[in-house]
Image 1 (cartoon, helix red, strand yellow):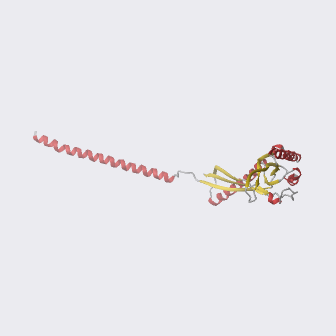
Image 2 (spheres, rainbow, N blue to C red):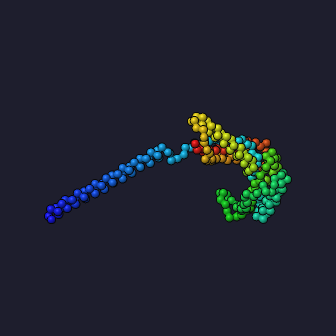
Image 3 (tube, one colour):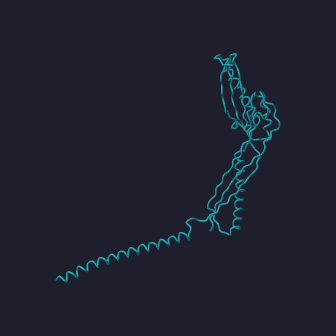
Length: 263
């Protein structure tokens, strides 16, 4: 009986050691297998890039233009001893100006008031300091009108003094919405053509042939308005008949960028 017990006591530790070895072997195999899978995954990630190969080309189109509209800013200034008479005088002059502009082909929709002010004039002391004594009133009414026939600008401006215009503040030359859209389309077509020509050059240089358009963007550069200030007309208190007005030229510019997927 004692011998049987001794055999059992020596067998128990052998069984525990065997199980421990089996467990360690299984864990080792798990990590080996995991390492193999990780290597295979990494190989596929290297062999197959995560992003698509793309190429971007750009082009610029420019179209030269001559302005087809002119926005003219004028002012009517009236002075008098009291506010009521100054307003009446200024309104009478303004009515005459509007009627004159309409007679020259300017539509009512193209005429708008842009400023209106009425303020008192104070008596000044000998040292130049204003006093509280009101000696009269001044009214200043600003008007802007648009001439859609550039050839008539000089003629219309020349006749303003006859209807009481005291100040010509400036003329801005620009493009009508219709002409601007037409020129933008022309400039964009040029830009796209140049971008496509650049794409063909790169195909030849780098040896790829199949592409698919995946993106397009454009950034127009709006034309700057050319403004003639009153100093350029040499205006004083009266508006003289101006010399022929040179409107100059400008450019409508479109930048286009095309993105392609290389197949």
